[in-house]
Length: 102
Image 1 (spheres, helix red, strand yellow):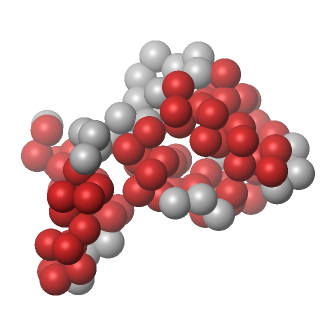
Image 2 (tube, one colour):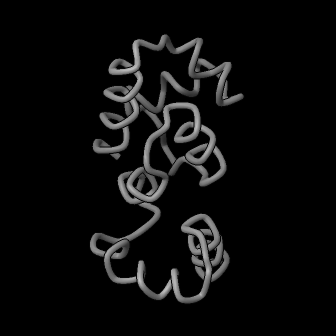
């Protein structure tokens, strides 16, 4: 999760955005964005929140999902070609994996 918090924090600062601006754009509370950046979360951040934050900061959703622990290391490279062949988005794949884990 350390990579996730630094990705979010660095992207926000590089864009010159405040926590409030990211919260407004992502529809995720300012407090939760702060917890993500500080790494003070007990559980994984949901894929929906990750997507909203990634969209707000214009960062790669797959890399953020990997950094958040939703995908094992190397998974992005291993499945990219297969996903393209199937016409799947990374979000579709992550949701399918989350359903499989349950």
